[in-house]
Length: 337
Image (tube, rainbow, N blue to C red; front, side, top):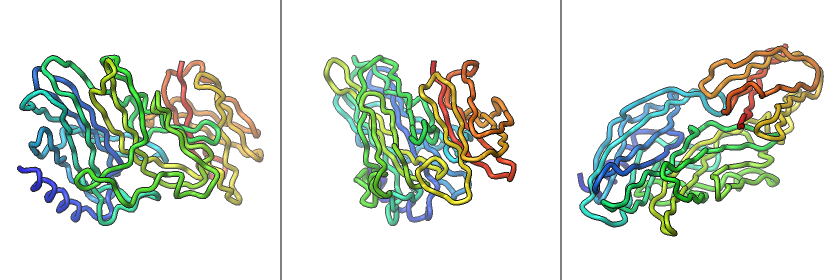
């Protein structure tokens, strides 16, 4: 399939996926040997949304191909949403050494508060790599799944926990999501620009940690992170995380009447978690891991409670708090030691 035909095929598919269920995607690569490289794309899909097309359209070295889905699993993410995590893999042998761009397209991107996808609902990932028979290299890897975030006080945090198998130096940049032909999506705005003033986002250039301070609007937003890897002062590759995050009103500065939402405080990632309510109401608190498995359940009373994390394994934990009236609020905290 030629490149131009591929683009037309992607655009045609996008017209079939109205509404969209695609929440985001990651890309990574590894040197297999000589001029052959392997590529992996992981997509995150709302299984209850419009039907997803289980194929990925890719180009590498000017050659195009259609990749079937290889593996599918279900995870729980932000806002306690069930998400389909789909994996696509393929290999490509390049014609010679050089710098190559590899692209992957998938239609059906979901519309969010900062991204109007109509008429372009295509998600495009691109990566640029240095190809050489003598250069052994694997891309940086996103260790944390998309849609897995937590709150520190009134701050939303997504830590991609990126590592590089080769120990290369990494740098992170905000990334504007791409659509048809891997061009900039015209309907995109930076997350904090579509909310009332007072909140702001920060991306740590050294770690990729994404923080949203004082978020004041609940809903879904598209966020892009690009990670480049450097060796000997030369950029040798890059990977992209194009993701949808979900913010919940109980952990923003929104004032909602007749609510008794808790405040979650954690002074450090290895310290205790403090839950605080405005009035005395009995609560059942379930602590879950990112798979949704119950770690601990406690019945609480009073307006302030401390949860010790000493015996918990490192990781991200979910809090599900149910009051005596059956009202449920959720949150996140992290344990790192």
